Image 1 (spheres, rainbow, N blue to C red):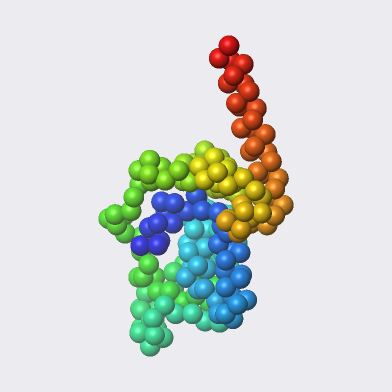
Image 2 (image 1 turned 30 degrees about the vertical axis):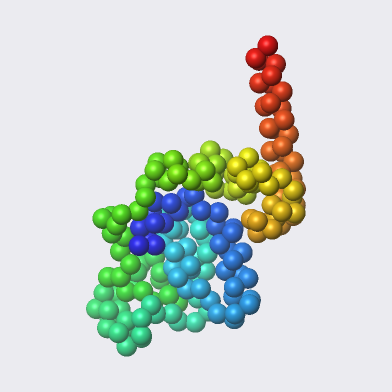
Length: 179
């Protein structure tokens, strides 16, 4: 299901956020997140190059099921071509994006989710999420934006300042045009 989700929504993900989460998780636990790496390799194979941040080889061999079971499928089917040299041993017969899976389409998600609409308008970026926080959640302080989004203070400060300037200029322009 995650593979099908990446097909539909991979371009709207802020991969820097996921990479930061992965790094913090691995430092804290000492464990890798192989499924996130698999999704990264898959997205890159589909032309979503910003996922390269996540498409990094595993430190040790990983199989998605007990090795004895997986090795049978690996011998029979081979490894996913897009996972070669990754240490992520997923049989070619596994993880196929099933187009019949019922995932909410982007148009319907945009109708229901204002944060997604901002990403459609401004791209999958900190800017989109900061604009969403300021406009929809009335969170304007850079320190609170940093805390809420998990970004560093510098982009929270810089982008919030620019968004506020844009909103102020838009309000003044609207008043001038209405006269």
